Image (cartoon, rainbow, N blue to C red; front, side, top):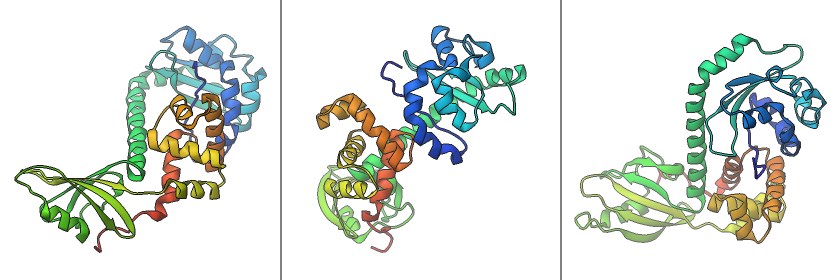
Length: 302
């Protein structure tokens, strides 16, 4: 709450484009939300409706309602807060139009009964988003991890760098074949996979599959051009690339790029609108999609 870093995921998908466009209004007026005020002042309220809290009846008079909820035709809301760190509010919200009417006491009871399951779901979703962010970053700038059986078949691979169940390209197979399994010592190599140059570290495992660390040698300038062709400014492209490289906070990105954290936040708002995403992880994944044409072909044909 202190950093005014608000994030949300929305269903149905058809509303995402509006959500991206209106996110600056959400960020600016979120402090007016009566359910948020109640959750912050009295922890442990469980599932609550606008009619349950002070200020709920006048919610339609706020700028938050006028500029964010009204365009979605949202009049009533039921929110259940989940366990979260200090100064962080994590919640699931159900929305209804004026035509559908207020949520019932039974709706409140159902959400309270589901709160434990929702907390677990949020944790899994958060872990999944972090994993996707890490995979996207590893596939672009850091090390992807793969394990290869003794017959050269890929057993597992992060970030989709190698195709599971298919034999590794000959350039990799020859490196693995030359590794000293008895010593267990790693070896470093540079090789070509398709049209791309890769760095490779081979970790022989005496009683298991060979572990490979792979890193594509990619040109950041090319990524910037690709992002600008997608509609970003040069500075916005730098912010996305820094986010993908570090996964850092606004302050960390600001320090790396020599700008203020508030400027990074403004750039991210513009990035979200242009790339049609609503989260940092989604922005990095979008970058990965835009630059995926430079990835090597599926390594099944050598």
